[in-house]
Amino acid sequence: GRHAPAPVCGSVHLLAARGLRWAAYAAAEMLQIYRHLDIREHKGKTPLLVAAAANQPLIVEDLLNLGAEPNATDHQGRSVLHVAATYGLPGVLSAVINSGVQVNLEARDFEGLTPLHTAILALNVAMHPPDLCSRVLSTQARDRLACVQMLLHMGADHTSQEIKSNKTVLHLAVQAANPTLVQLLLELPRGDLRAFVNMKAHGNTALHMAAALPPGPPQEAIVRRLLAAGADPTLRNLENEQPVHLLRPGPGPEGLRQLLKRSRVAPPGLSS
Image (cartoon, rainbow, N blue to C red; front, top):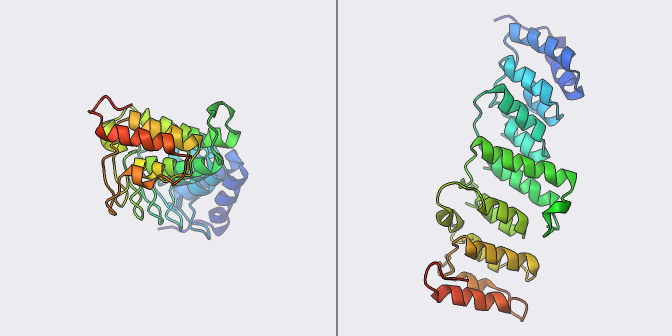
């Protein structure tokens, strides 16, 4: 086919990065004519991915409406959803939703992460140290939380597991000692909650991971929430340990030790 003029190829990336919408649109229309709308810059990013990383939702929507490939990925295997999740850009996700294009919500980057995994990891960083009171989230944490909620609303599979570690988003939230996020994930009205709560990552349930956390209010809140959601304290990991065996020694977790022991023998539905 015809070759687009070189200046146009480079300029649409620059214009998108700078947020110059009308100029970017004109350049993108030129590329569309020459069927070069998904041309890549030096890091493998298409104009769509550049616009997303620059947090330019209007340009993202324009490019998708002009026919940009919505599932294009960069040299790290990251799609437009991964980019939005990494940087906490709910406006970019809104643009994708508004465009009506079909995007692959379960796409994996080269680390084996879905956009939802990426969003949870980014949120964990923004909420560290995690605050028991979610009313005082930073703007960054609020934006990243919005991305988690939007991806779930779009239909991202909350039971999907990381390729390397087999962890679900619940494992990741527990590992970060983040009670607020654990609660959010447990309130998802999707599917079989008990089955989700008891999924294993290389043998360990979320309750195993919670029991292994440093003692303190976040650990206690997480263990209690998991038990209330149907976490099974009798399940064993690959080392044949139950969650109660993973509590740190000492007086700190004594209350949890008693709670987990009681829960192991209580009939279903009566565990406190």
